[in-house]
Image (cartoon, rainbow, N blue to C red):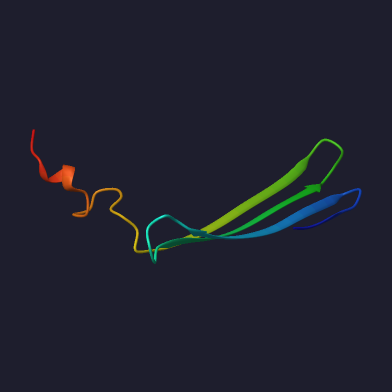
Length: 78
């Protein structure tokens, strides 16, 4: 994480990379996250703030999740 600031302004920039190896053979989940935050004191009573987040998730050989044909129970009608 990188952060800095002064009397009028401050910012923060962070990056996280998470590589999860799960129980199933040859399967993994890779998550990359970038976040940014900034504040600026325009006057003593007015402050501007900006926040931004970005996430990317990649999976390999994961079992069925959500609404896909990989989940057997979704094939049964009620």
